[in-house]
Length: 411
Image (cartoon, rainbow, N blue to C red; front, side, top):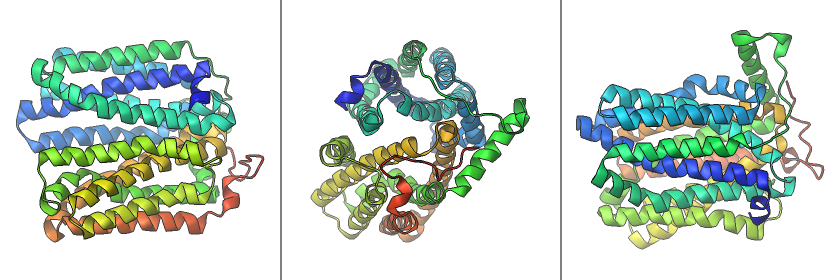
């Protein structure tokens, strides 16, 4: 991490994303509190969450094509400026439910463009050997920000209302845009298939990206693995509070400790990876964390000990963070530069689609069969995801000593 952060261009991206996440933490807490205060309805809160997911499904593939066609820093700056404007409008006019819904949709839409651009640009900012460190730094900053600032956000909203939290979010987006404006990245943009411009060109680029993913065993396998994992994690993450109350028999205070255990594990994961692993591009490191997390879900379902649950969830956090850093690094170092935006956007779509299905189905299953059944099934899905990856992707598919990505054809 230190070597990555020592590189000035990456530091700009790091601080832009970190400051933006500070604002996101305040906004996320304020948004759900505001909607519930305005309506008193859990359904309205659920609608707000859905409006944050839908843009990924609607615009994800187009966002990937845009990220691969236009300068990625420019895409990020435009997204940040737009998000700052929406967050500021929310701070001023947030007492209207329609405004809140529209803002949730708009913020998520622009984030759908920002995220694949940010993920795609990392390898251009650091040396190849420092990509793991760069991803570890970004992940660690995000986790620490959430753990440290979520309680402060709750206190601010309780004392001053949601408006100041949204204003802080607007300021964080503006600061991010200013930092990114000074970032210089030399990358080659993807050609438009067939030479078509406008919507026809975007559609052709989307089709070309999907075709390239289908031609790669690694990329198609990863899509399947991500879908299975999201079908598990959507429900188990959303219903952890139910597991705490009905199975572990603990109240809100101890539930907070469970979340803290996940956060501690997630923070330690990248440090463990950096300390003991020299090359993450191995199937055991890419797919092994799914097996680890699946085993944790089974343990949570099988035992009702609070202490055991704390330890297991810390291990789950380690698996989540090491898996994420490895996943990001493998894609960034094996997928051709001109294809990265579409690949990252596609995987965002796969994840959010399966996550949405999981949340809905998990709630129904918890009422019909009990919360333990949800975690047992979640564990089975994660174990299946890990085994699928280990069986389908031999070590050679993650690249040789020359870090070649020739098996992924570039459209």
